[in-house]
Length: 602
Ligand SMILES: [Zn+2]
Image 1 (cartoon, rainbow, N blue to C red):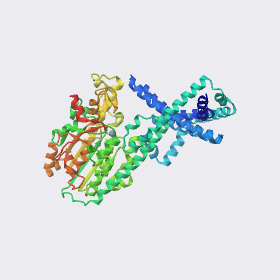
Image 2 (cartoon, rainbow, N blue to C red; image 1 turned 90 degrees about the vertical axis):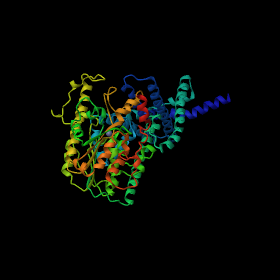
Image 3 (cartoon, rainbow, N blue to C red; image 1 turned 30 degrees about the vertical axis):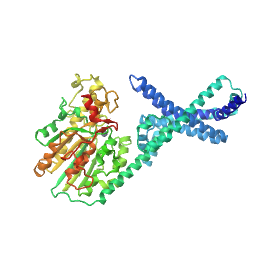
Image 4 (spheres, protein in one colour; image 1 turned 180 degrees about the vertical axis):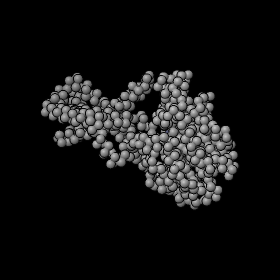
């Protein structure tokens, strides 16, 4: 009997914060787990939800709810100890603000709070943010959320007053019936689950230092986990930028080796979301690349067949393209300098013309990358000139560059296009000249397409054809220079190829196909007529390398080779043009061995 009494006493004592502050506990529980609710929504996005998928989703949502219950308990305990509404009500206000923030992000960005979104929010400058919030609050989406929150706060205060006036709570504790006991047990189990999950945060925090994004995936999707993720991600972005700057500064402490006296123009054209399977130079049955074919036939365009990008999203692909790090041996992009600095220090004028700087401004990709590319110190170290305006279409963008350019004896020109980036429909002018492919051209397409699908593929192919024209413009621009123009894409894409849909979704069933479409990239090198005269050996070396397998992250080694700059960051064994070249292990998506995977499939 004594023991039973003790247990009851303990349960009562532990349950007290929840019972006395029940309205506050529920409010915090809802506020913290709302991220999880947003995640459940994902279930409706897939057509045939698989049992395993649902289970894993319920598991992470479950973790989230448990963690939220535990944290809500701590908040309730705080309010319980203070016993005044001047603590309770501000706490309730906080919970509602969290909910409001989540709803805002949900409806504005169409996603739950993620580290990327947090980066975006932080990088939108203060002035813009307040101005923006002002307009948002009175907008059609903003107003209902604000009014809803105010109503919720008023209602909650009413309930709280009623709860604390009444004796309901003490009732529950003094005469604990079966129902109350069951309820308390459930609450206790949930809170215990949360405590258990919380304990697992410690190893997670340690793992995070080693940058394993995936570790988060199995964690809760509650507000706290999200906030932790966001905080950590922002910190990491800052650290990486600082490290990258420090690595790039090192370039300037190495002696400058004069380049050859012959003038030379090295151009890197960075395309976007360009899938090889839709380029006729790579065998596509629709004429999407007529200009490149003409250049190839004239002996000026050299086509590489087997280059792979380690990532299928712009941010990471760009970082590994620009850094001279040894990606395959696990070196991080920020451990080594960005290659444009080596060119600048080596006596080259470096033009960086970027048509994605303003593209989808305020989104994850643009803001994340801009934080690095336009850091004042990176600008100073890497570029001689940068563009100040963007154009809707790449063709106009190249005209803008042409109007601003002036010749230098040695020059590196980086042209970052919009290419066929999401919404290929918007990447080309809708004039009869460029509306070349029509939906009816895809009536025999496999997999079969409905009319929307036919339009999507037609738009993509039109954008690819327009991109071909843009490349033609670039070749023409350098026709009288001794120029090497390297054209590639940061990653591939999918446009109803081996499965339905567009974009860069994961595929656990057919990763061997997914990596081919999303990671194998077009890679062509244009050599101007003058270059063929002044640098015949270089042109020959490029021709001999076309069959070699390569990776996007080692393109910088090839460019350093072409530049003739003597630098400690050049490594012949990673330079695809070098006779001592050895293709490194090609890891894509940080988990697949590209060659192993695709060879198994054959
Ligand atoms: Zn991209």
